[in-house]
Image (cartoon, rainbow over all chains, first blue to last red; front, side):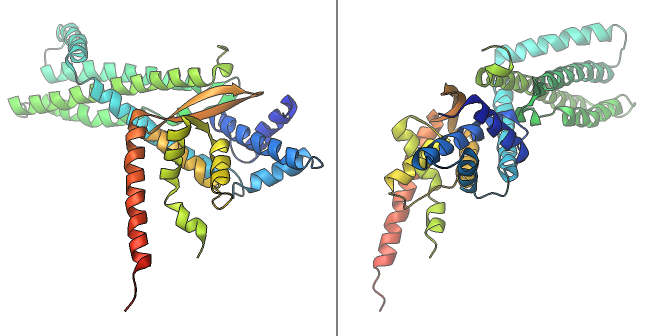
Amino acid sequence: MLTKEQIDSLFDFCRAQGVKYYDVQVELVDHLANGIEEELAEHPDWSFQKALAVVFASFGYVNFKPLVRERQKSIQAYCWRLWWVLFRQQLRWPAMWVIFGVFLLGYRMLSMRYQTLSFTICITSGLFILFVIFAGNYRLKVLEKRKGKSLLVTYLTGFPLLLGYFNIAIGYLKLTIPGHVSGLSILLAGTVNFAYVLLCIAYYRTVRQLEKQVKRDYPEIFNIA
Amino acid sequence: MNKSSLYKGCLEPIVLQLLQTHRRMYGYEITQTVKEITKGELQITEGALYPLLHRLEAEGLLEAEMQMADNRMRKYYSLTKAGKEETTSAIGELQAFLQTMTHLTNLKLT
């Protein structure tokens, strides 16, 4: 069995080979350690460094960067999938009523001051979306580095959602121009807006889910262990 | 002909089938088991295995579980419900492919 110092040196080796993410390092360190233990058992005269060189060569890489790139792609695909699953989960009545209720409350509060329907909806959803995205991004930022260890899970970001909402907001503000308002345009804008709000909530829930998984998988960097 | 290129397309069903049989395995264990079963005929490179495991995990076919082993963390992979269904279908496809190849290689050229 390798010593703690040798395991630590494998973490250093991974970092030197282009792996800065702790979640990727953990798996590679275990693989390298298993290989080295086997090589040393077969060739007791070999040094730790020689065994490491042999095991590393079996990866067929110059460094670990291609592996990290592949991992980034799969993490991204995983996040998108999770986001989509959580978005679809919300298209059920109990969840829809809660969201609708929150909106109605916001709308009532704002409409006391602003009379235009589209303007009120635009501001209510804008504020809500802003809050949800910033809250999600803040949680990701906190997750990003624990005890100086970066996690690949933080590859996700909600800022494109903010940019996307500008388009919807512009559409809404157009509705405030006299002559642009019709029942159909309000219905369309309202549906797009509502779907967008659901998407943002799903983003926040994705972050929470990732957070839970990371805490479960790497308790040692969250002082849980 | 390079044997490894023949095996390349079969890597996914092989890994899925192994996980079906062994319930849960870690990366190094998979490479060693394949080497052992095939008596060294097929050696899965780590550079091919890990991207595959990560992709299957992202697709929801595998789930991972971390566990302390010796003095380090170890990542175990196991099949999800969708992964079990996919294994059956992947193995079926592989067997159909093997049958076709057998027919083709047994053809007598006139």
